[in-house]
Length: 253
Image (cartoon, rainbow, N blue to C red):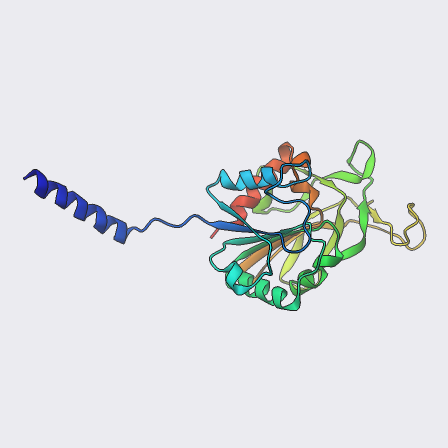
């Protein structure tokens, strides 16, 4: 009788496992194949280990990939993060990333310098300034390159946030309807277009986008004009909330 009961329980558990399969943990892939110097596997002040741990705390598998981005390398991945690239993606890689997002994946790109990601961003209808932003409102310790961003649109990335800190960022603009700026500077921010270090003829003072988010196909993407936001040294209270929201948003279905 006991053996029969044990066999019945085993059969019942097998039926349940077939009827209700355990979902695989979502995977986030960090690109390390384009000259990145600040990575989730490092523990330096400018590395991304705290960001990686933030993802793991939400049961996300964190992977790194140092080779080319291809359909094969992105297979089974929920989200791709390209942070602080110093080398450009090839045309084939851009095509693979585009297919990945349009098929339902998520992409987060963070700029250290703009040019390496230029062609990738253009594929998603986003462009960037040729100089970093200098803010006059809510600067951090009086440094115009470092400032708080408080002009935030209603978006899941900003749940529970009234501002976050940015440390040297590029202005972002969308040039098609797939995306929009969701975080902007104050109206007195400017970009030093002529490179003389002061606001002068040829420079432009206005409100600039610093985060752009959008959708294409079945997927979604976000571009941050600064990669320092998520580095260990700068992942303070508000930026940590932003990191947690990013983890949630990247794997949202």
